Image 1 (cartoon, rainbow, N blue to C red):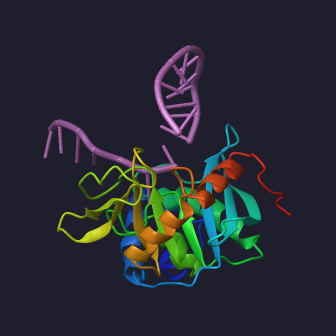
Image 2: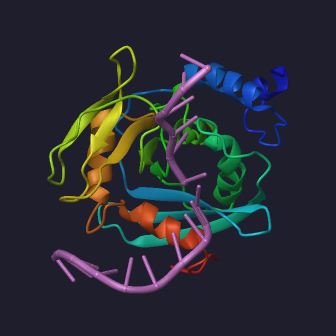
Length: 231
DNA sequence: GCGACAG
DNA sequence: ATCTTGTCGC
């Protein structure tokens, strides 16, 4: 792996091979802070959508007040899809667009929800951990399906959850029911936040749907639907 | 060697 | 993620 990538992890024009990217994750994972209970006035949701034939990735960030959950700012940005989708290396594909969108943001959120995992990852460095570290903002991984680890089926009611454990039995996240009788979400520490705090924050953002409100809005915005003017 | 595999 | 109609449920 090139030393440049380690010294300048914010540079996403890494022309890394998947193997080099994985090695970089193992190095950067040591910098991830896995505790914190940030005061939340603003919560953001981030999602990325692959544009049809353009080979571009469109990222959207929606910043909401907390706990009222009213949209206060939205920004989008395009970046080239310069890395393929490889399970475990999602941040190398979506990261550039995410960082570009953040540069346009005026209000800095106190915590960010990502559509993917945090430390519930083979090298403990999923999208939420990677972005949280680079931005130095508390982050939570909020994935729709499992990538790594195992857990029991949580109870069927909203708020029920079970631990997600790695091969050694260490806690790497929680499988959280965010609505009665719907598939659970996989919540994990991304950066500078405790698991229990993350679980409660995600739950507080789930008003009426399976997905927390910031991610729902970001999902729509990334697909092009305007939920609020970008400027 | 055979599965599993965020979006 | 994407390909895709009707259908079940609040």
